[in-house]
Amino acid sequence: MSERLIGILIDSFTKILVPGLLYTIPLTAISFAVALVIAVFMALVQFMDIKGLKQFARFYIWVIRGTPLLVQLYVVFYGLGQLGLLLPPFLAGIIALSVNEGAYCAETVRAALESVPKGQMEAGECVGMSYLQTMRRIVLPQAMRTAFPPLSNSLISMLKDTSLVANITVAEMFMAAQRIVARTYEPLAVYIEVGAIYLLFSTVLTYFQRKGEKALGTYEFR
Amino acid sequence: MKILEAAHVSKSFDGQQVLKDVSLSVNSGDVIAILGPSGSGKTTFLRCINFLERADAGTIWFDGREYDLHSMRGSDISRIRMRTGFVFQNYNLFRNKTALQNVTEGLIVARHMPKEQAEQIAIEQLRRVDMQDRRDHFPSQLSGGQQQRVAIARAMATDPEVIYFDEPTSALDPELIGEVLSVMRDLASQGMTMVVVTHEMTFARNVSSRTILMEQGVIAEEAPTQEFFENPKTERTKAFIRTFMNR
Figure 1 (cartoon, each protein chain N blue to C red):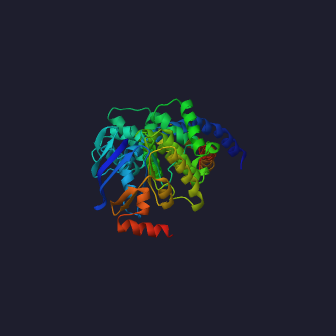
Figure 2 (spheres, each protein chain N blue to C red; figure 1 turned 90 degrees about the horizontal axis):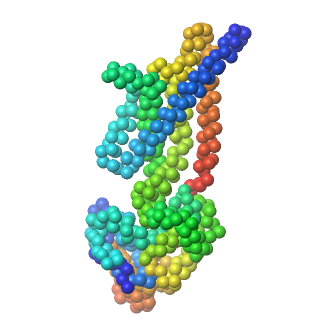
Figure 3 (cartoon, one colour; figure 1 turned 180 degrees about the vertical axis):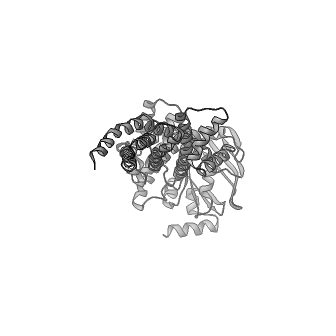
């Protein structure tokens, strides 16, 4: 490897890492938190069979899972802009990412809710708790424990999906890498470098996933 | 003193009628054993009178008021449930709660009891079923018999007027049945009102005050226990007793 190339890689490392810390990580964290709220809500209205809301949830999941994230980003940023709703790119990114991920996570949470034995709800009602009390204290916590590994999957997948937000002018890691390539004409080395930084981030997430599973695993299911 | 009376309870599943006009009256201190072959409707009956299944028809009288089982309001259901206990065949302990929390949950969440007071009651009840040493164990760390004993403590803790037992020993390994039955025998001797759906003929004979035989969704015979076993009236009961006692 030439000295020039090594220089470029060292120089670009911080130039990629800093946008990663400033944009990629916050985008992932905020969008995933919002996605989880959407997911639990959409899963609950389906599980509890709430008329109207259940149909809305099915429609939402159908549309979002059936269209590309890139298209959704363009609709939110450029499309809504045409209607006069000019969103800052970062905010548009958060909206598209969380609405997108929420649809996938809703299915995960719904499946997890359905995996909790019916007897848990019945036992809660038999000791005098209401449906909602039992849901909040008994059924949902068990479901979230079951959903934890697949939700971690979604989180890691979302971390990588934030690279698409470069398309709506958010200066996150991938856009930083593209700029460096445009300047240095070293696509192979620089794109591998940005890939390695994504890998670094997701490795950290995987580590926390394992930690989290251990912390939640204080009660094992039969 | 009459605690509750269920009258003319009927229930169908998918056009198959599993309960036909079943009635039951429970007095304070009664231990009622409901026997019957599988599919006779005994579990469904118990679930209907605790509203886990919605009956197609029938009434329940409780605490001076009569309710229609089919159209009963949720608030009435909760009010009655607050004063009854239910023990399931497969225990149904809250899997994300320790033994102690399983007992305190209904007190703290449903009855808004202060935590310290609830824990005091829970420890007392766990001691009663000899589970106080395992109070910080999760259900998955307990044997079936231990789980069922915690479930009984959970039902007892709310100071119910009556406890329903739905085949409480049917899911247990044979060597664990004894510990659960002995806890139930203690409760009965302390005057607890109990309705027990069971296959344990010996328990029914030795512990219960009244025995009911159900078959094909109806009550085939109901009599004071001694009379039921020593002088059964119907051929059906005679045959049933013969089959089970000769095993």
